[in-house]
Image 1: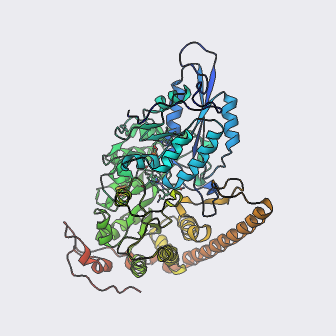
Image 2 (image 1 turned 45 degrees about the vertical axis):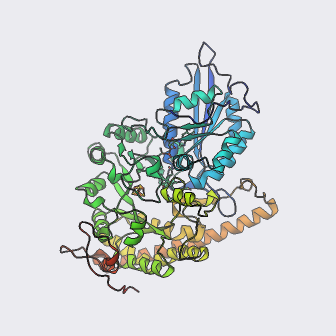
Image 3 (image 1 turned 30 degrees about the horizontal axis):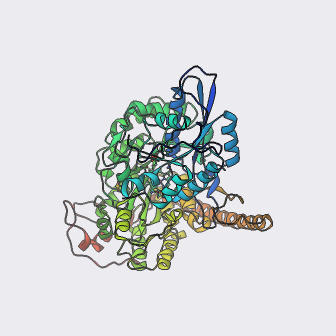
Length: 612
Ligand code: B12
Ligand code: SF4
């Protein structure tokens, strides 16, 4: 372990640097004591400064499951001594309202404890800091971990001011991965000797036999569809310059064993949970993917576990023999794919060399053949992008690529990425408000587009892809391919409406938005109740009516598609497989002069774009 800085006593009930929080003695025979750990995964703020939270969220937090699993191990093993019972509570602020005073009361009632701010991403950092500030004001020990802390410490030459602010508040920062390290942190906090920073970035734990992520049923069921999560591995071999993962979790594939995966599935199934988001950034590059999928297939086919999986993969996964077939047999019904762009120049510019645009269609058709729905991420704002080129590219995708759901992001210099490091070193201006680093805001200048134009391009992209006409085409493609109709209908509704109606990216979407008057961003005024509640009612009615109209419209389109016999034989350019070697899509010809001459790449002069 490396620790920067000196050991610091954690304040307790205003007693800075005094006796340990519990008066815990980790040695000796004492009466039974309790130590309460409150784990909170912070959300972030909307443009009005209200916390983005829902009655039910749509995606589970694996960071929360991981840290909960590690704390549960500490509790089982009596990490604070045989006389101390460790109580753990976990919540995801995306689906749960955090009552700071109630949390403090529970910790006090237990006789002591700590607050953990879990898996804090850059966009969640301001919210996490606000929560930390409130807990510290109440005298509670607070420890914060996640990608913002890890990414900044991994890549920047000195501690940024926002992390220093946390330290000044007395918040302990944790960088790196906590497997095998939680006992030390917990003991230090409980004895009042927490260090300002724990830095394990240079020492990544092995994943084989690592404690596995798990959450109690009551936390999982706050996610719509009752999805839980686990990471079957960490690390990715590629080098995309906008990515933070490789700089925090490394480029070497570290993976869990099939036995551990089975244990995770069984532990969840025992509480009635069999749907999982496998959060590996790129499951196709998990070197143990095959034994893991084989075990999941066995659990499904022989032991009748009703497993459903959501995976994240790269655009070359179809080249791995049997990967897609086995993923489908293991229960995969949907995949997230980092398509990112169709212009090879943009892909090369960010070192995303592994994306071969001439293989996109084959890859998407391979998933379609297994009835697996595809979600593709598409980044807007590469250096050569213009409003016209982006509009052209989206039309090309609609016509030529059989992807179901397309989701848009701003190219963002995320703290922890090479892009962020380079801009920082060169002194290029970047937005200082971390709340905006959610891939839904322009955080730095673009060489060809003004900020306003870029924002317009982002808003237009959703409208351009999710036209009723194209939504109908996607439904027809789904019907002819045998993809689950309810799933496609729900996904189309959410991805089409989330940014336009709720003003949030679909990855942050949930059902029934909550806005708590008193939970406003630090420094923003709390609105008078006579102004807030009428505004909120009108806001709620407006949003609900927009959703109802969209749902009604899409349901009618789906009913029409299903009733139409022509849907059973639907065929269009995107569904046409390549039949002879060297055959490429029209769009590949458009970008031919930009394709680097690597092995297997088509070599032709560029053709003119003829898409509408
Ligand atoms: C699953 C996932 C999601 C899920 C769930 C979120 C979650 N955190 O579980 C969903 C789909 C909701 C999501 C959404 C987004 N995500 Co996301 N997501 C991930 C992903 C792929 C895995 C997260 C994970 O489980 N990691 C494994 C855990 C174990 O690692 P960890 O979080 O770092 O936690 C460990 C340590 O940090 C430490 N630790 C963490 N907290 C604490 C607390 C204490 C007290 C202690 C002691 C230790 C500790 O211990 C943990 C165990 O080792 C990561 C990439 C990655 N490889 O991590 C991206 C990642 C975290 N997401 C990212 C982003 C940008 C987003 C989005 C903003 C946009 C997008 N395109 O994805 C949205 C918005 C989310 C929101 N609501 O605001 C970025 C964040 C980068 C940054 N600098 O902020 C990442 C790194 C990917 C990337 N593009 O670079 N995401
Ligand atoms: S493929 Fe994904 S996880 Fe791997 S380096 Fe690129 S963006 Fe990061």
